[in-house]
Picture 1 (cartoon, rainbow over the protein chains, first blue to last red):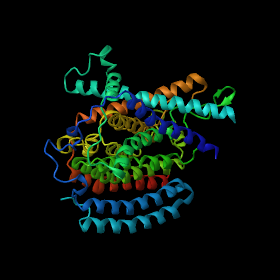
Picture 2 (picture 1 turned 90 degrees about the vertical axis):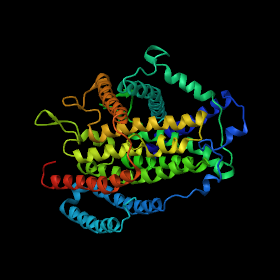
Picture 3 (picture 1 turned 135 degrees about the vertical axis):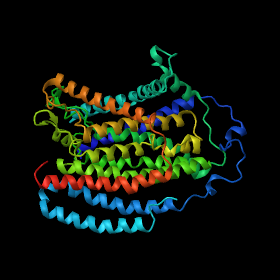
Picture 4 (picture 1 turned 90 degrees about the horizontal axis):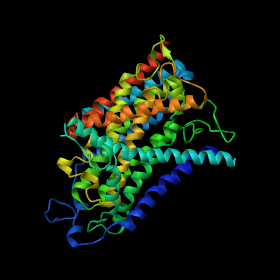
Amino acid sequence: MVQYVPIVLFTLVAVSFPIVTLLIAKAVRAGSPHPVKGEPYECGVPATTTAFETRFSIRYYLIAVLFVVFDVETIFLFPWAVMFEKLALFGFIEMMVFLAILLVGYVYAWRRGALEWA
Amino acid sequence: MWVDLIVTVIKVLVVSTVLLTGVPIMVWVERRGSAMIQDRLGPNRVGPMGLLQPVVDAVKLMTKEDLTPEGVTGTNRFLYLLAPAIALVVAVSTFIVVPFGYDPGLELFGHAIGGFVVAPDLDLGILYLFAVGSLGVYALVLAGWGSNNKYSLLGGIRASAQMISYELAMVISVVGVLMVTGSFSLDDVVLHQAGTWFGFIPKWNVIPQLIGAITFMVAVFAETNRLPFDMVEAEAELVVGYHTEYSSMRFASFFMAEYINMITASSLIVVLFFGGWTLPGIATPGGWLGALATIGIFAAKVAFFLWFFVWVRWTLPRFRFDQLMALGWKWMIPLAVLNFLWVGVAMALGYL
């Protein structure tokens, strides 16, 4: 467990830093609220809806799904890469089989236009 | 046990101080550097060569009014306030596994200092780095979502798509390095790059793995949202994207997080592909002087790549979003896979 002590300490420093600076800023900053200042910026035009109703492209969801698929691939790659010398040829062929299967999915996603953005 | 703890505390304090001091210096370098590239003067009023400009900026940002846009209430308000803190915490805490010097068994108070890295015994260095570093996307998305601003929302969603796309390429580029090293520890990665081929070519990973180094650097530029990949901020289309509505110290938190991320990214490029603290001829020197020399070499290399960030920013124009996605998915990932396949074949044939 002792190797995690530095991480805990560093994370404490990291967490306390924004808290301290925000508290200092709170103590010294100016404050003269005005209703106009609170309006969300929209080039000076009064907003007709809240931003939470804004629509955006469905493709962002598609990218998120593809990311999950390919991120699993990288998780498989890491332990294999570290043990590459010990696994030798057997491990290499195994990984080629895995990548070939993955390539099918990649080509499918590409052909179906999941990677296009137009 | 207690001495160990004291040594660790000293290391933590020194590293975090250096990291946070690097931010104002980087701000100055960026402003003076951009002025130099654009053939103008840049900040030159406060202090010699404008060196105190970042200090004045910090005071200004601290004393600014802190505004919360209307309509940001309840949970959204919580997310709005949380986002800058996440950005800063994630940025600072990723630096912990970066080895910044060679330790030939030095002692402090009669106690081994255990390497010039904050967490020396953490075997999962690279995994920790990617695990914590990828949390940074939350800050951008939550800031974009919590701001009740259409530009911010679009910026935050772009941030999520861009960062997860380029994270794949970044992680796969590192696989080749892991293969030749056979360890997750960044210390081992650097030690493996000590020495030379034929007596003069440094054994840095960049030479056999040029494709991997290039894909890694491009992906890191995208991960830190720097030009030419700053689609997340894109002043011309989204005002400044996710932090449009932030002011005062909360804005400064995002600003500092960006520069700390740049420092960590440059350190990573140096450690993974450019030999860390090694130079041909100087790999593992002894004594305090040798250790300081390795730290100096590392700092010089990191400084070069930090300047490279500024240089690229003022040289290349911004991508279009569809080009960005096409580059990430259709070029970077296949190239990164090609890189580690080449490493595998070269290792199997006994060349590496």
